[in-house]
Amino acid sequence: MKPAIGVGMVGYAFMGRVHSQAWRSVSAFFDLPVVPSMAALCGRSPERTADAARELGWAAAETDWKQLVKRDDVQIVDICTPGDSHAEIAIAALAAGKHVLCEKPLANTVAEAEAMAEAAREAAERGVQAMVAFNYRRVPAIALARRLVADGRLGELRHVRAQYLQDWIVDPEFPLVWRLRRDKAGSGALGDIGAHIVDTAQFVTGQNLTGVSALTETFVRERPLAEESAGLGGESRTGEKGTVDVDDAALFIGRFEGGALASFEATRFAAGRKNALRIEINGSKGSLAFDFEAMNELWFHDHTLDGAEAGFRRIIVTEPGHPYAGAWWPPGHGLGYEHTFTHEVKDFLEAVAAGTAPSPSFEDGLRVQRVLAAVEASAADESRWTVV
Image (cartoon, rainbow, N blue to C red; front, side, top):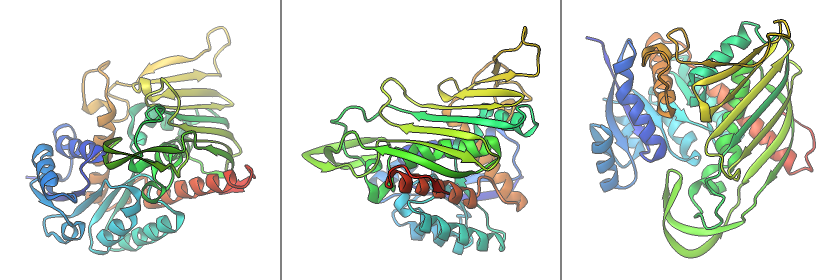
């Protein structure tokens, strides 16, 4: 019998549901050194939390995250709340000796992220691990892209183009949900989806951004108030309107520490684009391209081949030798969004069991937070070049 490790999760909306799916399924597909036990779910409403716990497979329900952290049957705290509560919960859980998995972006400010990273460093000295949940690293095609770059197949990196395009708030009558409020989310498209492409680009290239020049824009400055919101939606509109105080779109250029030039675009106003996280990297020996709306495909160009044969070719990333894919279905049978979270939980559990630092670490989350802060500072200062 493999030892069990108890998990307590804070938050049960959109992210809570996908994380619950990951905790439920990971042991069925991966041979892990420990087996997660879904001990307790925490939310503010007693009735809704109890209902969610039954529906999602959690053994118990709590309405106070501080009580969740104290539970003897909880060794891992999974944080799926808005960013304004990440720092308080994570720091307290680490101090209590609990391993922490925290949704992205790590925090709402650099100061909060620094405090979290420091708490994680101190906890690591006691064998307590912390990881930030940038799930797109766990797309098999993205992990394969990282492998190709690390193996030198692209040579010297020269260009990076990254986009995250959505359209879910194009309608000006879409309500003022928490993701559109600075006090809850920290920023808008920049922190919500821009953080993903910053992390993805830094992960695939193996390099960090050193400076940026940015523009941000808020296209719809007032929206109907919602009495409550969960996930990506809002409920019970009041009829009144409130001010949108975050960005709707962010556009910036940058440079990587290896010298490559980069461009980034994050928007929730790209009509017709549902979840188009895209990245293209050009190097001296080749290029690669990826679009999450075709998440099982990676396009690769080997520029060392004769010109008569060279060109982008499509790789269907479902073979047993591809990252993560071999644990699932026969070749050619694609994976989905939810699988990235199962891969995330799998990697985290393996690191916890081995006593090794998981990746991406809170330090990685802090690096992303510093990029986001530099983007906001540049946009507020006439797009002035700003060092990260």
